[in-house]
Each structure stands twice: as structure tokens, then as C-alpha cells.
Length: 388
Image (cartoon, rainbow, N blue to C red):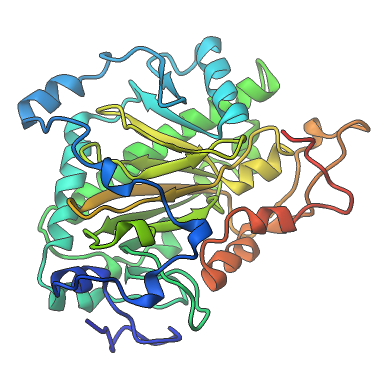
């Protein structure tokens, strides 16, 4: 279970959660048991809510153009078939203001590519453990095969493994960290990253137009340092079955530290929960073929909390494994992020102190997921978002 070779820099021996499940244990180790206040409700209701479909049925559902904008489980669903339409910008902007989360349909990324990406990475996590261990990561960069976030000794851990990769900028792309198996994984991941990064560019334009009006479409991209300077990372999350899902989480509550996240969810097994501003946890029911988009902390800072990052977490269950693929779209890492001048006024002073993304992401790398404590700590003296 322990990854001694890849343990450099970790405070304790690395244990793969997948190995724990495969060992046949009936109770989870104490280091995975969450405090009562953080435990989920009814995690075993995540499975069996949908009839499993054949690939032919999935292909019919995932044809671009099949979906109309609607709302599922109170999370907005936004049609991106006309990304330059002012109505699209308004819908994206409303979702970012109210929820910080939405499901994107008719997004331009083919359903066939989504299925290939899921299959390739599920294939990786089903490889023998000795093959996966060759890619064990360290907290220096987190690149590779991992099983924890944060380096605090004795921390309560999450019930999940992951694989983290840098895609852009080129100097951070280390191909030796990319798995060689399954044979199509590299090519598929490169294609998926390219297509979804392009989608992020379109989403940034819609977010910006919805914020600043006609003529402001490029403003958020400029604040990121330009579209070519944006960083792109991929984290593939693998949540094995859990004998006591009511005691733990696959990923603890957090907001994403970067700019924007696009998630390819497991549409057979639910697990993602989003915290509504009223405090309730809402379980997301993925629309077939959709991609889930959420605002990160950097966009909250740039928009002076007009758009808000939102706490979310992942539940696990005893019946089914779950896999998701998150692509993070981030600002140029050494560029100070602060509220854009257009969104500052005497009535609305800047809420956040400047900080580069390089400085900012050290927090989660050291401490692990901690709700919204990091972005809240950036608030300028007297800063109050007015409940936005």
C-alpha cells in the first residue's frame, strides 16, 4: 500500500486509497474519519438514481444541440451553442453571480472525446499498483499519481486518489510525468486539454461580456495575462468504493484556488455537492454530455466578488467507484491578481489585496482543502462583500 519511492517530501508514508479498498477492510482507518460536522448525509443514495445506458444510447444523448437551457437540482444549465450571443453572456454571468457553478451544454467538445477521456483514465487506475507507483508524486509540484493534498502531519485525509498534470505553459509540461499506459491516454489527454482550454477561452469572453457589456469581452483574458499566457492543469480524481461512506469524503470542502475549472463528471454515479449561499449542500445531477463549470478564487478577486467561487465537496459510496476529470484554467502565475479598476468605486472599494497565483496556491498545497479560508484571508482591511 505504501509508496516509499514517491514519499519524498510527504510527512507520512503514502497510502493508496484504492489499495485500502482492495484489501477488503470493513472499516476505514481513523485518519480518514471526518469530524461529525463535516460528514455527508445519505452518501449511498448517490448510486442507482439513473438507469445505466449502452454506449449507443449515450451517443444519442450527447449529440451537440440536444439540450436546451434549464435548471437541474437548482444548478443552472447554460446552452453555449451561440457563445457570442448577448443572451449567452447574460446566462453565464447570472450563473456566476448567483451560484458560481453551472452545467454547460452544446459546448463544442464532442461526446466521443468525453467518453474516450473517461475510458483512458479509468484504464489507468485499473492498472496494477506497481505500474501506477512509478508515477508517485511529491508535494513540490504535485505532478503525478497522488493520494493527499497538504503536508500537515496527522491531517485527516480524503478517500480518493488522483493524477495531476501540467499542460501549459510549455516550460511546466514534463512529459516524463505522463503515463505510458493505456496506449491512447497521452494522445487523448492532449486532445481533451486542447479542446477544453479553447472552451475556457470562449467562457472567459462570455463572463467578461456579461460583466462589462459589449466591448468588454477580452477584459478577463487580459487580466489573466493574455490567453496564450494562461496556465492549464489537469487533475483526474479516482474515488474507490468505501465501506463507511457516511464517515468520510472523497474531497473535502474547498473553493478552487485558480481561475476557472471545467469538470468532466462521472454521469453514472453522483458525488459532487455545491454549497448554496443559504448554506445547504446541493448534490449535482450531471446532464449527459454536459461539462460542469465553476468560478475559481482568482476570478472572484479580479471581479471584486461580483463573480464568486463556491465551496464544493465530493461524497463517496459503498457500491460504485467514481472518476472525474478536472481542467484548471489559471492566470499567468507570476502576475499579481487584484480587483479590476473597472469594478472599483467609492461605493465598492477593492475587497482584496494583490497576490500572485504562485503565492496563492502554496496555501492549498501546504494545508490541503480548507473551505474558503484562503480567499477570505486576502480581504483588505475593512473589506466586506456585502453578502454577494
